[in-house]
Length: 115
Image (tube, rainbow, N blue to C red):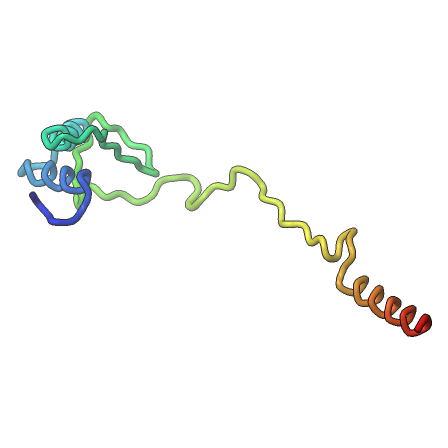
């Protein structure tokens, strides 16, 4: 066992990365990670994601080499739908704070007049 703690995917990833002296193409690296998982009885399927589009064909997997700057036309999260602010029921259409205070004063005046 590589580590006492850590997930199966983490350990398989490290074993696959350390198994080759030179960087492997992405598809071969992912096959090695999957093979490591299968050899230990796990059914997980490894997946890598990227916010950058790139060609998997000729690209080699490396943690440190080949880092490129972000070329996306927009950086950051894209808003997909407008989130409306919550409606404040205290001041829009219902009995608000001032309305409640006025009702309380009127109620106390009525009680004082009756008794």
